[in-house]
Image (tube, rainbow over all chains, first blue to last red; front, side):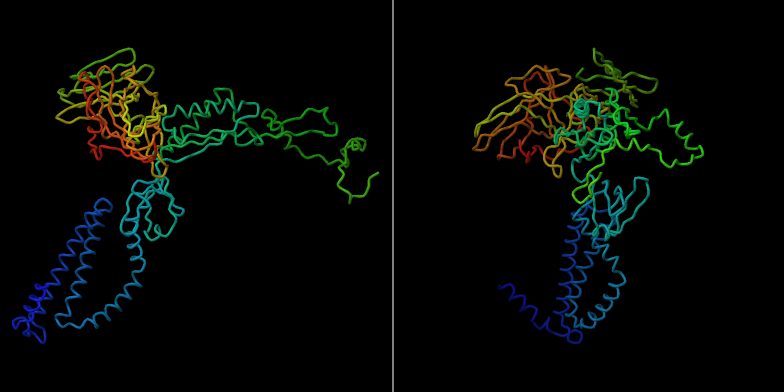
Length: 333
Length: 235
């Protein structure tokens, strides 16, 4: 407390209180420089710490830009704080600065938005270099995260630059942010094949593959009795780093292993009853028949025959049971 | 097979043939395992290089995706504040490491053991682990020194409750592997809470008969960040 009083007394002594220029005293000039030096020291400390903190997070060019911006911002605040000691009226500067600020603000709105988004992206880190991400509809591998934009490469090798504002405000799907991820197959086998045996084969293959994770374990089960066959669902977890390789190799291994065991992937097929009036005496005929496909195509090229007026004899119709549609239907003979 | 060799050298047994032979101005490394295609690499050296063949951190094959080893074993219950030693088996990967001008490099890594990986913890924050399942033993079990090693695990229950343990996760960065009559590692697992434990390696061989293996992770200049691993997703 006594030190502060002593300092005040020193600055109020006749040496410092004597006006030098207008009403500006030596003490005012001294205060101006003290504030300026303090601002420079604070700016240096902040920019140095910022540089250390962001060293591994941003590119060198961007790092220089950020540290310099922080330095000059703090210096400017210090300078504006010190200026009144030189009897400079800041109101005029502030009005002019405000107007210029508004003009620049409108003109550089998107640039500033990208800059601020870039800074937030650096801190939040929703994506990192080398990661496989979907940004809106663009699927890229991130190559660089800059202060205004993010650079990526599509799987076709095409260069993509996305403004940071768009990344910050849109949905990002990061395919490799988590350690492991799951993928699945739907494997269809014929009805006459043994589904339990197929599951056993698939489970053995998964067990043999190193990168099909033990925990969380795989899941192999009959999922659907579909129109053409039995659908076996296979769900496998793999490390995110190698999941695509595992996904592509495993499917082919499963297909080959099932075929080696005599199972087949069924083709779409339909059972058609020809001449249903004769009931069960006619066996069902299944098409398409690969051997008759050419014959059928040749027949289709023939000129069409005139359609007969009545193709089904009346007698045959008597064999049909006409469904009864409820009490509102009039009685039949 | 384990040991140090001056090049050119040759080793063969029923299952494997390793060699570094002089081929004009080059040295050619060849590995031939039974039923597999030969692996060949060319070394450009003056011939003063030395080769070490020894067990290395078993977290490299078929591709390095993690540096953690998870060993799952028959569940054991340990009393409050109890200290017990159990023996487990772990998979072995064998490294062929070449030294030249005070620097080393892994020329080849292979294994006679099947590989399997797992996830320890949630998919969001957990870690991928090299996975191995084993029984527990009260004394070092017999093991094929080219396929499985013996882990002496000292379990310390620091809690005031009985703890049910069925796995340990070890960090490959701080692994210390020794080879002699069998391949050996010594580790400690401290049960800290009902859901967390801490594992670390002990830097001592089981007996004086053992020789320290050269670690590949040091060869690759990966710094050792932490000596312990915190198992925070259960044991």
